[in-house]
Image (tube, rainbow, N blue to C red):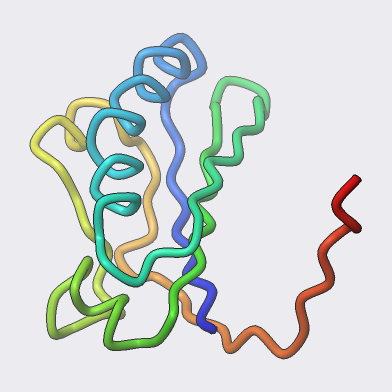
Length: 106
């Protein structure tokens, strides 16, 4: 399993609107891609900025490429990102999941 991370930041006053925008674009695209195992949008207010960390799990790098394209390291951006993002990673990071421990089902 592969974990993919990407980070960006917006002005704090744009945090809620950008969160909604991410939900409609990136989160929806991640979730709709075959081989995606989950999407987490993490958010942190930091002074004048709101930072976002996208964390996704994938079956394989092939599954990541179905979402990101042949150059899986390049970040995926959407038409309104330039309007909101004041900081962004232009690349995504990929990690092999060495261990996963889930809580017991109750």
